[in-house]
Image (cartoon, rainbow, N blue to C red; front, side, top):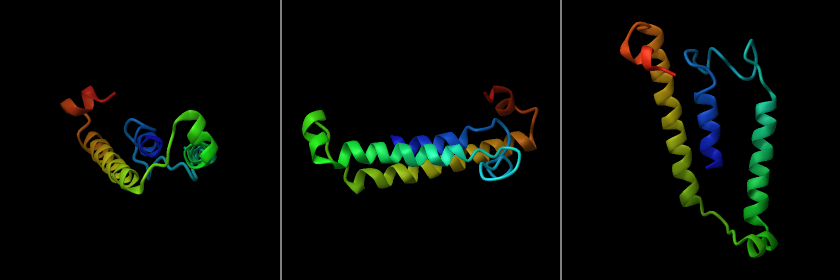
Length: 102
């Protein structure tokens, strides 16, 4: 869930501009705090799932890689689909898809 949120964040940063046009690393859309927040989020997730004491107290456990890898694939698919939607909207701004875009 945590990993998929990263892909969702980058996909929905803007309504029309691509992630390459509205880059979080440089330019007008620069936001370097995002990467710090991502690292903190992953650290908290690992902290609560990998430390045995928290596993016993909170009833959590390790997440096997077989459940993590599909999340990365679906996240990339989500990002690609949204980038294609943005491309279509930029090419055809008066289409039905452009009118119902959030």
